[in-house]
Image (cartoon, rainbow, N blue to C red; front, side, top):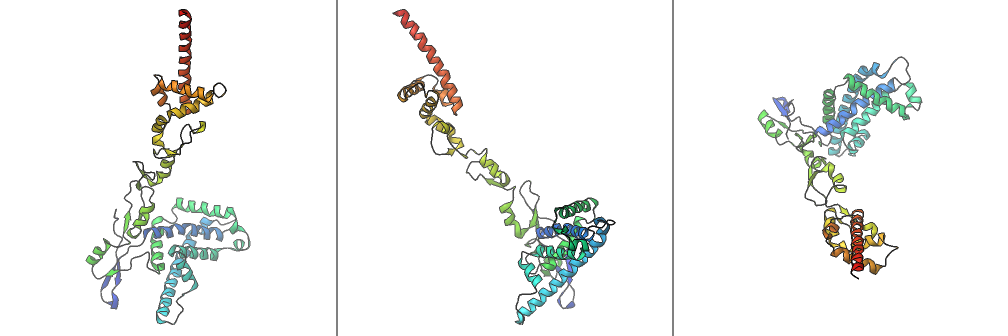
Length: 362
C-alpha cells in the first residue's frame, strides 16, 4: 500500500541557473532505527552529567543537553561527509589509500548510518560525563542502566523530544551518513512533472504492508525482505494440511492442532510399534489394527489369568460379537479397555445363564 509522497526538496541546479527538484525519499526503517537511538542517547548524556549531584537531576539539564546533542550530531555528520568526499577524491586520483578516516571506514563498514550515529551518541555522552562518572564504576552498574531507562520514560511522558522531531533529525543524519547511497534517493529532476513520475517508481518510496494486521512501513526496496519475515503473512501449512495460517501462528498450529502432525499410535504404551503417522489417520489406523490392539489390551488386563492362546481366542470372540463397531470407535487404551470389560461382563453373564439352562435340561 503506497503512502503519501514526502515533501519535495528544491536545490540549486548545477551551474547556478534555475532550480532542480530532488527526491526526498529515504529508507523509513533506517530512519526509525536512528530515531530510536536518540532519546536513550540523550538520557545517557543527562544521567552521566548529573551523576552523584544532589542539587541537579537529569531533567534539569535535558533541554540544554538536547540542544548540544543536536549540534554535535549535525556537526559530526557533516564533517564525516566532508571526510568521505575527500577520501573519494583522493581514491579516484590515486593519491590516497582509499581507506578513508578510521571513524568513517569503521562506521560505514560496520552496518550503516545507524551504527555511526550510535558511536556519535557514545562520544557525546562521554563528553558530558562528570568527574564522578569518570572515576567510578557507575557506568558498569545496573542502576545506571535503570536510571537511563527511567529517564527515557519520563521524557516520553513529558513530550520533551517529540517523535516527529526526532524522525526529522534522523532523516537528516541518514542523508548525511549514507555514504554508499544505500538508504536514500539522490536523484534530481529539472521539472516537477519528472519528479512526480519518478516518485511512483522510486525504490525508496514508502509503502505499508498489505498483510491483514501488519502495520509495518518500509521502502519498496525492502518489500521482499519484509514479505519473507512478516508475521502476519498467510502461508500454507508447513506440514501440508489444507489450512492456511499466519506465519506467527505456524509453529503453534504445527505442534498442536494440525491434522498432519505426526503422532504415535494411541496404543503405543501397551505394545503397538507402528511408525508415527499423521494425526488425521488415527481413526483409520485403529480400525485397521483393531485385532492387534485388542490383544495388547487383553495382555495387560489378563496378564496373570490367561495364556497367549487363550487371549487370542478371546480376541476372536470379541471380534465376532455384535459390538464390533463399538470396539472400532475406541481410539485409546482407556476407552478400549472399558469397552472390553463391559463386553466380557456381558459374556460372563451370558455363559452363566447358559450353564443354568443346561443344568435344567439335564
